[in-house]
Length: 596
Ligand SMILES: C[C@H](O)[C@@H](O)[C@@H](O)C(=O)CO
Ligand SMILES: [Mn+2]
Image (cartoon, rainbow, N blue to C red; front, side):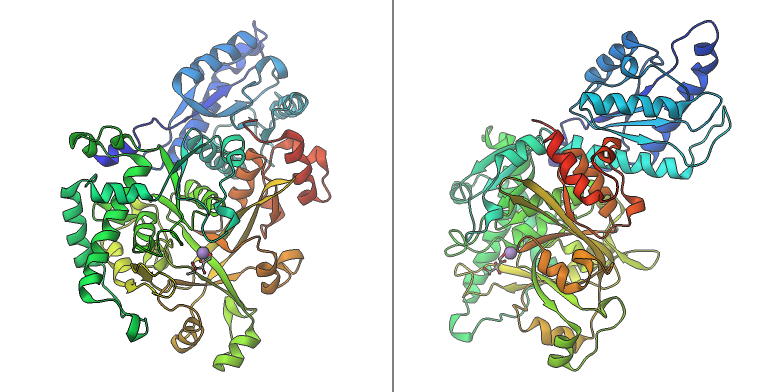
C-alpha cells in the first residue's frame, strides 16, 4: 500500500436513498412501485454523476432494497444503511406516504426529502407532512420539491430540484466525511491568538471530530532520530532544488544568514513537511523502517502548527511545510491538499476544512491585513481603483499557509481557477511553482530562519472568504464574504505590498457589496470580520457554506449570498421568515450541535 492509498484507507460515507411509498396494496402501492424506485435511481445517478469524494472517485449511493411503505421497511432500510456506511439520507417519493411510519429517524446524519410535485399522487403533501414530523421530533430535514407541476409518471429531475439535491448532498457529504476524523494540534497557542485555543466542544459536538495533540518537540525527535522515509526525503529535496526557486533575501545585510545556513534550512523545512504529513495521516513506509506506532498517524484531516514563537524563535519557520502541504501537489505529483492552519488557528482551520470539503480545492489561509480605501490607494500611488476593486480592496497576506494553487495559474476556459487536484495538469503545477519564489524568512520575526512563499494571486477569480468565530455563551458562528481576486497595476501592487512584508504571498480581494449591513461597503466587511484570519476558497460557495452551517447548527452572522439561493432545513422557517438571519440563530440554539 502506498501513502496515497493509505491516506484514504477509511471508506468514504455513502448516500442512502429511501424511496417511500403509499403502503396500501391491491392497487395503490403496485401502481407506484416502479415510478418510486425510478425516482430513487434517478437521484442516485444524479448524485454519483456529479459529486466526488476527496480522492476524486464518484460518490456512491445505496438504495433501500424495497420501497418503504411502513415501519418494517423503514427499519430494513436503516439496517442496510448502517451496514453500508451511509452518512447522508435522501428520501424520495412521488406520492402520499405515512409520515412518521416511513421517515428516517437517524438524527445524527443530514436528512433531505424530495417530494415529486404532481397532483395525481400528492408527493408534496407527504413532503409537508413528514417535514412536520421531523420538526416535531427535533430531526431537522431539508425539503425539496420543484416549482413547476410535473405530469404523473414524468421521468427526469427538474433543474431547481437538481440544484437543491446537489447543494444538500455536497454539504451533507462534508458533514459525513469530517465526522470521525481528527484535528491535530502541533504545538499550542501561537502569540495569544484565541483561534489557537482548541475548543474540544466545537470539534466534538459540532463537527463530530476528535482532538489530537502533539508537542512541536516531536518534530525534533523525528528529525534527530531519522523517523521519516529517507528515500522520499532525498527525492523531495531534489525536487525542491529543481522546482522551488529561492528569492532574494530581504533582510538587512547585517542579519542575513550564510549560504551554508540557508542550505541547511532547506533540508530542515523539507523534513518538517514530511514529518507533519506523517503525523497527520501516517505513512506505511515508517512501519517498514521499524516505527509501527508512527506509521499510523493521527487520522487528521486537518492540523494546525503553532510555529510562532516557540518553534520559529529557534528553528526554521513552518511556511514551506504549510504552503506545500496545503497545495494540490508536491514531489509525489498531484494529490489532495493536506490542510494545515498556520499559528494553529484551529477556527480558521475549520473554515479551510469546510471550503475544502465543499470544493475539493486547495485553500488560501491569510491574515485579513489591510482595508485599502480608494482614497488611500490614490493618496499613496496616484492610482484610482477600478472595476471590481472600485470601492476598495482587502489585502490578504500571511507568511506560510496559502496554497500555491492561490497563484491563480490554473485555468478553465481561459479563466484563472483553482481546481481539484485530479483536474490540474502538470503544466499548471509548473506554472504555480514558477510564479512562486521562496524568500529567506524575515529574521526579525523568524529568528530561526526558513523560507516564506512569495506570490501574487491572479485577479479575476470568484472566491469566498470564510471564518468561524467562537463567542462565549453563543458558541461558533460562521461569516463569509463572496467576492473577486483583483489585479492591480504592478507599481500599485509594489507600493502597497512593500509597506507590509513583501516576502509573503498577497491576494487582493474585493468583496461583493449589497449596500446593506456588513456589505454596505468594503470597510464594513473588514470592520465586521471576527478575527485576524480568513480562509479563501475558489468559487462563490456561500450558499453551500450556509447549508453546511445549518446542518451543523452553526449560525451565520454575516454573508452576501442572494436570499433565493439560501437552503436550510424546513423547520428554520418556524423560527421566523421575515428576518432569516435572526431565525437562523434561534433555530441553531434550539436544536443545539449535531452531536450533542
Ligand atoms: C510575523 C507575524 O508574527 C505574523 O505571523 C502575524 O502578522 C500574523 O500572521 C498574525 O496572525
Ligand atoms: Mn496570521
